[in-house]
Length: 136
Image 1 (cartoon, one colour):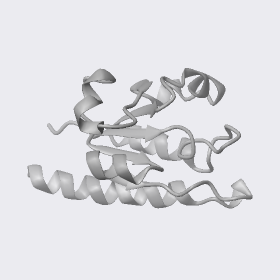
Image 2: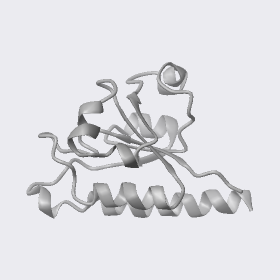
Image 3: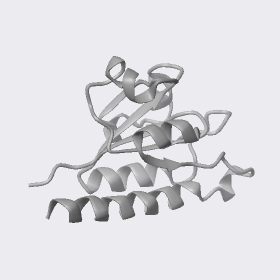
């Protein structure tokens, strides 16, 4: 049996907008990833943002919440987690290039028109398909 992917979402500018509103489709994406057997983590360069998980009642959808390295990403990863990320979603290209995943665009205003989480979900599904093919 294949394990699910370890998927890490950055908080600010990724899961939530600058004023801490949950991005459109964020909850649905997290729910679908969990239903597919993946392990979703939330992390931030500002430390474990538990207050965001509390505010948006995300705890049932998360496998963990932690800080993340903001430089020397691969070298310092062990200081924040013992879980190896398979796919990260971040608004900083450097960490995505170092660890693999997708760069998410800044939330659009008005926020109700933002569809970036839908694009990211499709990217994760593409990665998942390729990842599973490697293990067959």
